[in-house]
Image (cartoon, rainbow, N blue to C red; front, top):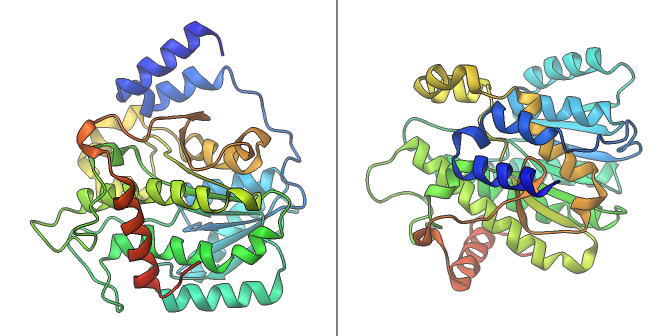
Length: 320
């Protein structure tokens, strides 16, 4: 990337709208090298929440690069429909539908046990499943729903599948976060969002901040295992989740929203690129590392990160 291009890239990122919209994608992609068409041939990749939106687009792009893709979904009927759609786009792709409600530790454990019994290796896990409830909701385990879906479930699933990730040639774990996390600090004193007035968008952004921190922590812990862990954000993409949960935003920004395929490009690149395997614990957007913080008040201490790790271990009953 030239100096001029880097300046434009940084400016677009800081101004938010140009960087997060399809304008930023169009600006940046001109400097990218295409991935080889068989970049993931022989690789096995799990994508949670793969029955629609970004998850389905991710599964399709992975399959097009030759990967064996597991669509890990809560609703197997919707998952089967997504598999058929991806199969039509990529004839001959090896696609599996696996049931797992990532907000439920019991479901995650059941899925992981069944997967490990059948497969020795997993090359990558993409934690994409997401929710944005309008009011505070608890799972049957007593966890706030966005926390359970975005943080506790991915923490447990990553930990349980470590044996298979370690057997991979170059294991990858990717958290699909959000640029909304920039406005939130790590809320470790109230991770269950019990205090104050609950706002779905705030709960979403809080847990997306936690994902970025977990990527850093996992990246550090797995640095000697040949496993790269990253968080990324897709920018603003036109998905059912955005349309249903943020209709006002979707209406205003509609012409500038990215396609799901544009939104997931970096997640796929982080799995398929050799360059991404040389880094770990980073935060990415549009194939470039981005700062984890822009606002001083959002910066957490090392002790706060340690508390998040301990909290996840306690709530999931799993200590890696």
